[in-house]
Amino acid sequence: MSPTDELATRLNSVAEHMGATFFGVADLTLPGVHDFMVQRAGEEMLRSYPRAIAVGIALANSIVDQIPRALEQDDAAMAHLNSYHTYDVVVPYLNTIALRLTSMLQAEGYSAMPVPARGTSKAGATKLAGLVSNKLAAHLAGLGWIGKNCLLVTPQAGPRAWWVTVLTSAPLAAGTPMEERCGACHACVDVCPPRALAGRKFVESEPREERLDARRCADFRDQRAEVVGERGCGMCLYICPYGRNSQKPK
Ligand code: SF4
Ligand code: SF4
Image (tube, rainbow, N blue to C red):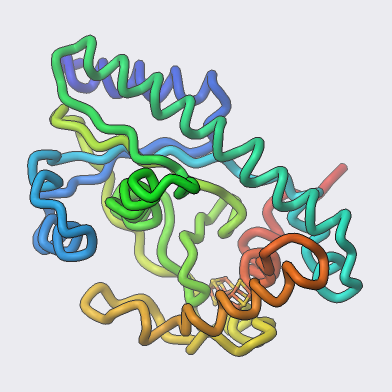
């Protein structure tokens, strides 16, 4: 086993022991990837990182399954539970894993940058979270595809996962981007309350606006905050059959 393969195995093992469900390595030197990232973030320094480590944690099905209650019955407790689970539990967990992997990479003499799993109230950190698309990194790592809901969809948990990225100079062996598997499914498009999804398949060269009316989605989630005290929706995450069928309780 080469030293970088051995390092990748250790990184994967540590992430897994810390609670990660998904681990993969994306090759950012694939044609067009650095250009896309630099154009999106306006940060040339991104070109100095040839690899991105994508780490994901599967959300609790028992909580994701309450999303319709929060929405259809205006259940504030369920809306809060879902928000708390994702942003107060899973996101900090991911950031801790990313920091640990960064420390390991630095100890081996490589540069590494943990990208926040989510924007914070601090303007600079929000910009940093936007530096890299966690979904893109996970897709390039071969962990899933960008679905018609504009989320990263995994075969194992559908879109019921949250992601963090660690950029690195370490020349780790990378995965192969996964082909999309939405097929003729339209469930997320049909369930979207404000009809914000166009139902188009992800095409790298097309801007996201072709697939998602982000303003319409954001306005709807803002309205929910006035009703249940939490800004959120998540129906396109809840409904995806790849997630709903993933774990049948015993
Ligand atoms: S979060 Fe809700 S409003 Fe936004 S795209 Fe998904 S289903 Fe539509
Ligand atoms: S609900 Fe269907 S169309 Fe939407 S992301 Fe999942 S598989 Fe794709």
